[in-house]
Length: 152
View 1 (cartoon, rainbow, N blue to C red):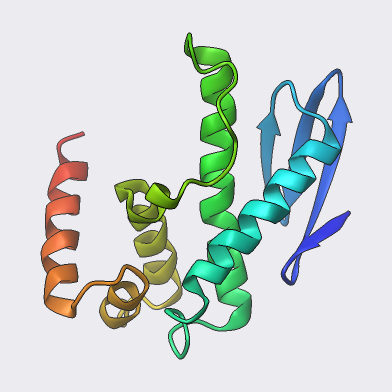
View 2 (spheres, rainbow, N blue to C red):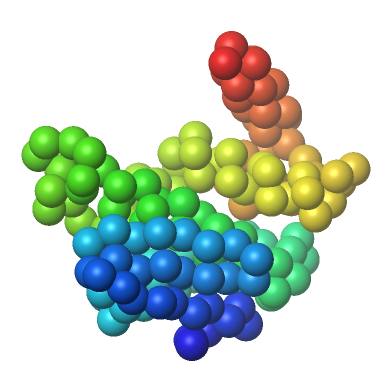
């Protein structure tokens, strides 16, 4: 067991794979070992949490920022690790959070979904601060993003 911020995380390694447990959530990391998963998770968590620390001031509690940061990190670690087994040329894909990922629509989706769940009637100024947009820019972005999701 280890902690990312205040969040307790446990792992179970079996047959060269790792199952990660966080509260009621669990994620599978194929072809990994516990030490690697823990090291990648904590390093990426620190990077992401530090990036949002000042932006989240007065917008999220420290515990909420931990949870959002871990959600974002696990999204990318899981996806990048999955790509290693699915796509030719991605076998050695680095599992580090990339600076460009901060501005990726999937990161923004994670932020919006998280903040809306925590603050359903009061998400605009929180999301716009985290995503480094004005409230007007955020409203436009959110509308376009919803239109994108509605296509599927």
